[in-house]
Amino acid sequence: MGSFVGNVSDFKKYIGPRLRNVVNNLARPYRIEVGQCQICRATQTLEAAHIQGRERTIIIDELLENYLNGEIVTIDLEVFENQFFAAHQPLNESILILCRACHREYDNQAQVKDQPQLTNEDVEELSEEAGYSVTNREITDDFREFVSGNLPWDEIENLLNPTYSRETFLVHFPILKEVPANADQQRLRELARDTKGYGRWSPFPIARDGRVFLVTTQWFDRCRSRFLAWKMQIENR
Image (cartoon, rainbow, N blue to C red; front, side):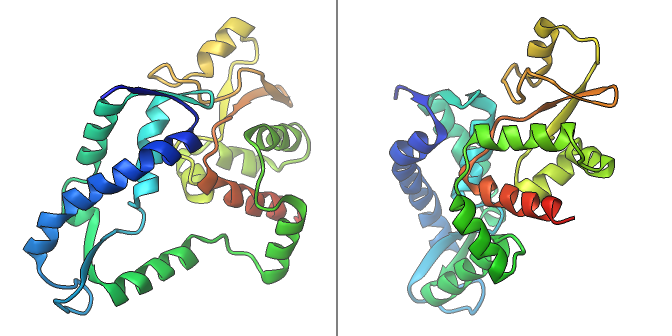
């Protein structure tokens, strides 16, 4: 089938349509088996919907995290497609069968739920200042400034917690990683990688009161508005 080398956005642009077809083929016999809308029990115009939190793009992001080196993905496409298929099993934990009206309502609820809890004024301010678009470098630089400056220690401890990072930013590993204060540059490069050898954090340390941290450099599109919402809350404390 070949391989892919490039960034996540290009992967979704060029490989995403094929994966959409994979989902459709996967769900077709399941739709027939279920035979009715799982919300209103209608039997006409049935469609497959990803369960909230297991959307196709989220599954793609989770799988690609294992193949990222910096911002570059290198992956065998057949291997990825097999993993993508397996990530949907069992189907009753990843797919809902809905009629068209319930499908539309379900998707609308998911979009509202996924938005950061901001006021209209917050949204306008974020849109004006950053257009909900910030680069990975800009996010990394902001974290450097916050951590080395006046970010409260309780929030630094939060950023070391993978559960907090996932719930706040939709990032599946800690935003910060604490490293030994005496680590040399070679050691820092090693510590910047996860247990599978993939680069997750910047090897350039951030020092604060005798403690040293690395900050992640990997942010997907779905995480950026979450970061901006967090940044606004921190700046308004």
